[in-house]
Image (cartoon, one colour):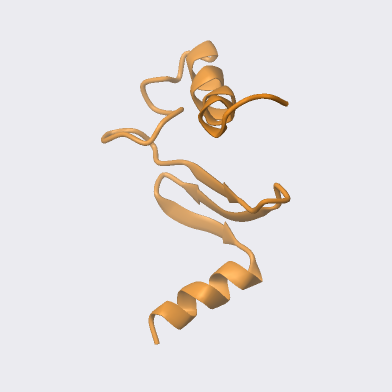
Length: 71
């Protein structure tokens, strides 16, 4: 692909938010923005999704890792 990780993140987040006129709420992690986050693994499989800072999905592996942190 020839793009850096930063360029790919901008193409997937900041650019669509700007095109849709939502850059004030979405597209980056900044104070006052929605904090929508998708965490992928190296195979681009979704591991966890957060909407407005709240976890709305996490796969079994991530859930298990998080639970073990609080034991």
